[in-house]
Each structure stands twice: as C-alpha cells, then as structure tokens.
Length: 551
Image (cartoon, rainbow, N blue to C red; front, top):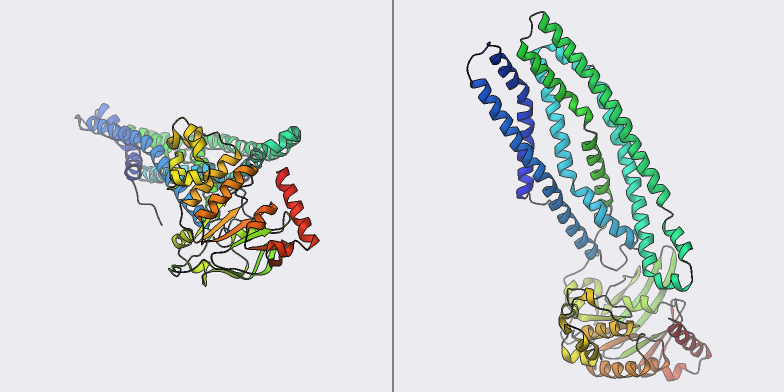
C-alpha cells in the first residue's frame, strides 16, 4: 500500500519545482537587468523582478534543503516499520528458511532501508536537475538556434556518460550491500556463540572468519570511488567544453548584432544550467544507492506471509492434538517424519530422543512455529492453518529454554502475569530483589539462564492455553527448583494438554505417555514404565541426560 504523502513530502514536492523554475528564469531576468543597467530598458522594474526571483529561489532552496532530509527520515521510518511488520507476518514457520540469516536481515532493515528511504529526494533532485537542463536548452534555442546546436554537441556524450555511471554504480552498490550483509550475519553468529568461542580459545580463527567479507567490501568501495572519480573528471571536462562552445557562439552572435548584451549574460547562465546535468554525480550516486537498497528490501517484501484462516476452535474442546502424515524437510533432507501422532486431550506427553531426533521440531508444529512440508496438524479436529492467528495464540502456549522478553519493563514482558504466576514459577524471589521490582527496565536486567526460564514460565501461566508446550523450559533449573516448578506447573495446567521435551528420566516418568523419537521418526508411543524394558530407550534417555548436563 503506498504511503500517504506527509507535510515534508508535499513541501519537498513543491519547493523543488519552484526552485527549478526560478533558477531557470534567473538568466532571463538577469538579462533584463543587464539591459536596464545599460540603459536599453529604463526603469526599476527589471531590478525588482530580479530581487523577487532571487528571494523566491533562496526560499525554495532553503525549504528543499530542510525538507529533503526530513522526507528521507520519514520514508525510512515508514519503510522500516513496514519491513518489520512484514517479517513478523512471515512468522517463524519456515518462510525465511534458507533465506538471509539474522545478521543480513538486520543489515537490510537498518542500512538498505535507510538507503531506500532517500529514494524520493534523490529522484526528485535528479529530475529537477534534468528539467532545469532541458529548460536551459530551450532557453538557448529561443535566444538562437545556433546556441542550442552548440550545446547539443556535448549532450550525446553526456548522456552516455550518465548511463554508464548508473549501470556501474548500481551493480557496485549491490555488491557493497551484499558484502555488508554477509559481514553482519557472520558477526551476529559470532556474538551469539561468544562464550563457546572464548572457551575454545578460537578468537583469532573466528575473527578471521567474521572478517572474510572485508576484501569484497573494500573492493566494492574502491570500485565505486573509481567510478565516481572517473565520471567526475569526465563530466568536468565535458562541461568546460560545452560552456566554451556556447559562449564562443554567443560572442560571435553579439559581434554580429544578433544578440543583445543582456542575452549574452542569459546564454552564459543557461549554458551553465544545461551543463549542470553532467555534474550531478552526487545526485546520481544517491539514486543508485537508493535503487540498490530498495532492491534488497523488495527481496524480503516479495516473500508472501504465512497464510492463515479465520476459524475458531470448539469452545469445549479438550485440546486433542493430531499430527497426520507430517513431514518436515530442510532442502531435500527429511528432518521429521513421515509421522502420525495423537496426543489425547488433557494428557501429558513427553518427547524423548537423542539430540537431532526432532523433539523441538515436533513441539513447534502445534503453534505453527514451523509448518510441515507435508501432512497436517489439528487441534480438536481443526487444522491449525485454518485458525485465526489470535485464536491459535490463545490456544497454544509455549515456554522455551531461552525465552525472549519483549517490552520496556519486566511487567510488560510478562504479558499479564501477576504475583501468583511469578510465585508458581518460583520467580517472585529474585523479582522482589530487583531495584524497581516489576518495573525494572529490561535493558537493566542481569539474569541467569534459570531465572530467565522462570520468567518465561510465569508468562506462560498467565495464558489460559488449552495446549501447553514446554520445550526444554526447565533445563536451566537445579533439581530442587525444577521439582518445585514442575509441581506448580502440573497444578496450574491441570486438565490441559501438555507436550514436554524431556531430558531427564523424571520428566518422562511423570508424563502419561512418552513419544519416543529416533532419527525423526516416531519409534513408540507408550508409558515410560513400558518403554524402560527396551535398552535402546534407556540408552536414549542416558544420552539425552548427558547432553543436557553438558549444555
């Protein structure tokens, strides 16, 4: 949807044409003033008109100078907002799978959107320069056709020069922004794993890996500077030749009596204005920069959001979860499935399996945090893809190993959780010790992994979801705290359907059923006590416990 023009946009759209018109009229008005000064046109009218034109041009120029950056800032803010909303609408269900990594998305959101935000001022500025030059050529032609012909001798090479620069600069800017995005992606990944990098003593190796795109970034920057430098000196030489040709022709016409002295001044002014098109290298750089940024933003905007329905769940549904013929792939590799699984309403099912068996992937399916490539997922008989987003968010609640806190304060981040939910998650103790308690800003929080998990659990308990998914949500708690929190969770979510990724035998033992996953396939669905007779199941539990302890 096109953005409605704002006051700054309208001011820029008005100021630039006025500035171009007054600038274009200035040589003719100056010619009249020169003739008046030489006594050819007596009276103060020419001087008053000159003052009016100069004042209007100055006012329009000042307005354009103020409106241009403001218009860019408004457009950038609007584009970033649109891009953020679009990325959120894409959802975590796999639309960005295989696409730009988070660091590159950040670079597009910040750098590319900022470049694209300056597109309108850059285009309007370049268009104003073009119209001014065309008007100047017409002015020369009105003075004398010979002056227009003299000017046109430099137009063809000038147009070729501009087209070559735009072609080269556009490709170079794209290279530069792609290298910038790659650098940001590598840096983001390194910052995420900073503890592991330091623990392994791999700082130098990781620094070399992160900085690998720098040569391409440098090459693209130097290529752009070379193109600007080459175009700048060629344009300067071309302008000088054009102006000399026009002024020489005007001088001959003046000597022959075909031009008045004031017309000579007008010819000089229009020749400079007409040739000014060829020195708009900076404006052309802005256009090329904006086009490259817009292209990178458009790549993301072209991704279609995850389709969703408008349906609702039965009001009295027990929370029955069904996976029918589910297959999840990454490229050509099957990560999960083919798989059929039914989780009875109001029951607890523990997901057990070695690392990479697909536990978290399966847990992501009911809430559409990942959509299957084949098959369907249903809650109380309704496909989750047919549900309205608000209905799905209300029906399925999640808690994770590293929950993200969103908002300005702890109170906002907990999304409606109160003292009762905080106490149930054993988060009330450290919340009371915070300097401002629940109103402590998030950027001032310094929490351990277990404390962060307890806040995520408190947030989950504030929602009356009929399906509760605990994806490694208590892995950061010590055994005593985990037992207390688990007891509180079982009381608070009694009667709801629960999916729990299990890393400890105790979690599996408390569940009604265990879904044992092996290499992405459902190997068995049975009570924990029944599966203990299988040595492979016991080995899978032991391996999972060791991995959890190591993590």
